[in-house]
Length: 492
Image 1 (cartoon, rainbow, N blue to C red):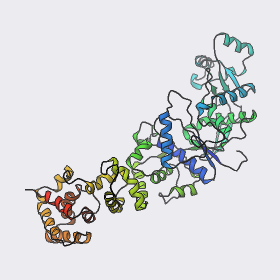
Image 2: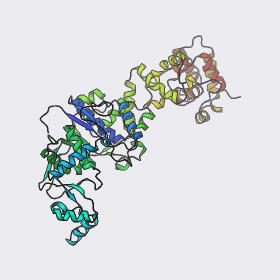
Image 3: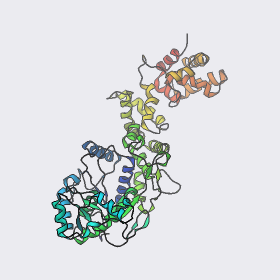
Image 4: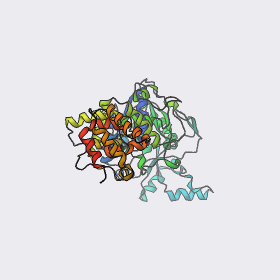
């Protein structure tokens, strides 16, 4: 690693599809690592695959990172001295570096076809699937000219060193690949297109990245990268080899790697459902790391303060939606009341509970009910059905069909009638008075257990079996509206 004391981490996704929670977990760990070490985070876009990369995916990446508050010091929109930060704009850089490596003998031209490699392996009594056999390493000028005369165009391969390639992984400890087990890799295609095996280490070298934290699926490529760094140092492109840390897989149901096609992998599904950034970041951090053995809930600031990449587990982490929801719920409940109102309002607007521009009266009513709702939701999208009764038009308000069928039929009529009589006689419409009147009439008067006593009243008033506290809800709804709904629940 460099002698520099400045930590420089990077996040370098390809813009394909919607952001995956595993990808965002990698971004989070790099961000937390850089921030913990008062270092810098470089955001780089690896967009050289024109068939798969898209501008829409690029913009979604930016949107997702902004929503979560994962910021970067260099990269798109931030600029920086090592740009451009999109690989599609760096092709001349790769061509120049490849030419230097070829001239120095670190790369060589290889003309062998896959069929020829397999045939040579078979002739030697070896498994044809062993891969490239390094045949073209020492071709003469005459042999190369002969291949060209046949119309063949060469790929450029890296000459791997004949030594064990080892490193101390920040997550997995000492790792070693024996000499001779890694065939010389292709760095540049025959058409001149640079491959990931060249572009990624070259960018890291030129951007002076000190630490590479990435998914364990990339671990097999690390020996090739270490060999390339050594070659880049010899030609004056790199100053050092960064330290590597390979992060554990994020698994889905059935302990399979969480695929992009799995709906639970899509970052925006969580935003749409009403996860808040504090809750989702907390849960993503737990996918391979913990702040303490006996503690799962912590703030983003506490994450940055405590993050230690050497404490990341090497074992796969399973994405558990139920646990994510539970942790998010704790963060929702920890929000200041005004902040909860601010964050939940867009979900109420989207659900049609509130208009695009809520009135002062509606906002006042929301602020009054918010603390009661805040204690009962795990994600913000739980709120609209819970508070819809408070903002409904009385002409169109109707209890949910299933709730009404079970709680407002003939057996419930004595309960509703008794509740109505008790409430109509109330001199003041306040929570405590409402509670006392209903308990006197239904629990004491009719001898009912509370669950049986209040379920019909709750459904008549709120339209649902699950709602904010009943008595507070009735006070907020007001005498006239509350009594009107009870009267409409009387059959006959």
